[in-house]
Length: 134
Image: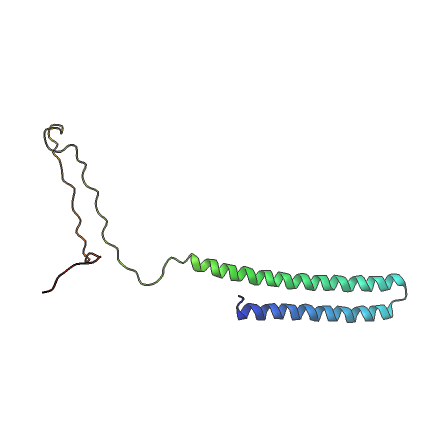
C-alpha cells in the first residue's frame, strides 16, 4: 500500500500534467485561430501533442523518482548494522594445543599429551532445571 506522502506526490504530478495539457490545448486554439493555412493549423496541433507528451513524460519521471526514493529508503533499512546499544561479546575461546597422542608412549620424545582447555561460561546455563523443592 502506498504511503500518504507517495499518494500526495503522485496526485501533485498528475495535477501538474493536467494543467500543462489544458494550457497546451488553450495555446493550440489560439494558434489555430491565428493560423492562415492548413499547415499552420497542423503545426499548432502537433505542438499541442508534443507538449502533452512532454507533460506525461515528466509525470512518469516524477513517479519513477519517488518510487526510487522509496526503494532506496527500504533498502537502506535492511543494511543498517547498528541496532541499538552494544552488547559485549564473550572472550573468544582459544584453540586447544594439538594433542599428538594419548600419553601411552606414542608421542615423540619430549612431547606430552595436553588436555584441551575447558571453557566456563560467565552466564547461567539455559534450559529446564528440575529442582525438586521439598
